[in-house]
Length: 590
Image 1 (cartoon, helix red, strand yellow):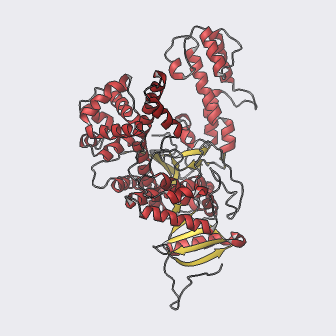
Image 2 (cartoon, helix red, strand yellow; image 1 turned 90 degrees about the vertical axis):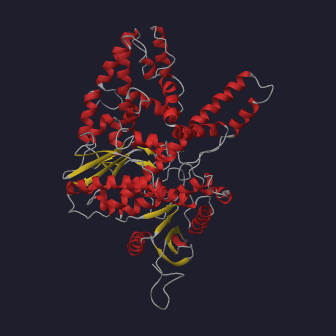
Image 3 (tube, rainbow, N blue to C red; image 1 turned 90 degrees about the horizontal axis):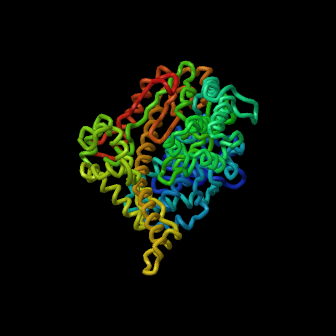
C-alpha cells in the first residue's frame, strides 16, 4: 500500500474523509480515493487483492466514511468473508437507476447519457458466485451484467449523481432515498453472508409428510402419484398429463367441467369429484417444484440457506430474489427456519403496512385514527364503514389496487366518504397514470413513463375514425396503467419505510457486543457468528437471529427502529406502525 495525492501535510495529520471511493486502478490494484464533503480528493491509497480487506477495514475503523461502490453486490461478499463490514455506502448502480427516472431531478440528461450504468435488474436470472477475486468485478456475482468499476468512470458517475441530487427539486428527499437504497444493498449482501439457519431434517420431514418419502431422481413422490391417480379416475382419463395445462383443460371439458383455465380460483367454483384431488395435486406440485428436495440440495449447506436478494428488483422499489425464492418461502416450510443451539429467532411483521403508509402520506386523520394502536381493518369496522373485518380488508386492498367489481366495488365508495384524503391520493395517482403521466413516491422514486406503443395506441383511439375496438382496448390499457400508478405511490413508499426500518435496525444490531462464539453458529461467518443480526426480510417482515441473551434487546431494537422509520419519513405525523413480534426457536412458533 502506498500514499498518493493528498497525503498528510507538515502537521502529520490528514483530514478525515467523508467519502471513500473504491475503484480498479492500473496494474491489478484497487484504489481508495478519499474525498471531503465537497467531493474534493484528500488522498489515495492502493492495495493488491490480498491486502484490500485489511485496508478497507482500517479506513472503516479510523474514519467510518460513506463508501462509494460501483456495485455493492460485487464488492461486499469478499469483504464480508474476510470479516469486514461497511457502516454506510453509496451504491452507484442502484442510485443511477433511481436518479435517471426521478421527476425530482431537474436535469437527468447527463445520467441518461451514461448508458454503461443502465443495467436494470432481472430478478428471474439465476446468479452464482464465479469465484472471482476482489478485482475481477466484471466476473463477480452480478444480477444484471457488470457496471463500470474502474476508478475514472466510478468517480465520474459519482460526480454526475451528486450534481443531480444537489440540483434536484427536493434534495433532502432524494438523499434519504439513496441512503436507504444503498443501505439495502449492504443488507442484502449481509443477509446472504449470514444466511438463514435452516433445519434440513425438519424440511425433509415436512416434504415427506406432504408428498411421501423422498423418491429416486426423476420419479414423482408416492403421494403425488396416488393423488394424481384419483384425479385421472374422476376425470375418466387414465393418461391425462396433469402438469400440461392445455391437455388437462381439455380433459376437464370432456368431464363436463366448464372452466376457462386450470387456475385454482376458477376450479374452486365447480363441484366435481375431480376438483378436490386436483387442487391437492397442484399444491403438491408447487411445493415439490419450488421447495422440494432439489431445492434443499441446491440452496442449503452447512445449516444455512443463503438466498440472493435483489434490492429494488421490482419497479416500485420492492425487493426481489434472483435465486432460491426467499420472498416466496411458503408458510408450510417456516418450521424449518430454526435458530442455532443457544440462539433464538426474533420475528416481527408490520400490521397493514401499505394502508398505514397511505394514511400517513395523505394525512388522512380519520384513517390514521382507525389504525391507532390497533388493527386498522377492525378500526374501519368500528368507524361504521363496513360490518366485518374481511369487508374492510377487501375494500382497502381494492382502493390500493384499483378493484372496481364485486365486494371491492361495493366498499370503495364508502371508503371515499369516510377517508376522503386517503382516497383522493390514490384516485389522483390513477388519473395521472391514465393520462400517461408518471407518479412519484414519498422520497422520490418515479414510475416509468408509458412505452411508445401505449402512447401510439392512445392517440390513435382518439382519432375521429378510430374503430370501436381500438377505443375499448385503449380505455382498458389506460385503466390498467391507472391501477399501476395508483399502487405505485403507496407500495413504493412502503418499500422506502421498510428500507429505513432495516437500515436503522442494522446499525442498532451492529452495536451489540460480541458473545463467546458457539461452534454451532460458525456458519454465519466471521461477522455474524457472535452477535444478533438480520437473517431474513420479506417486504414487511424481518427476522433477527440472536444469541438467547440478546433476544430481548434485539426485540427492543426492532421496535425502536420501526418508530424511527416512521419519524424519519413522516415527521410530526401521529401515524404508528405496530408490530406483531415473537421470540422463539422456530419461525413458525408463537
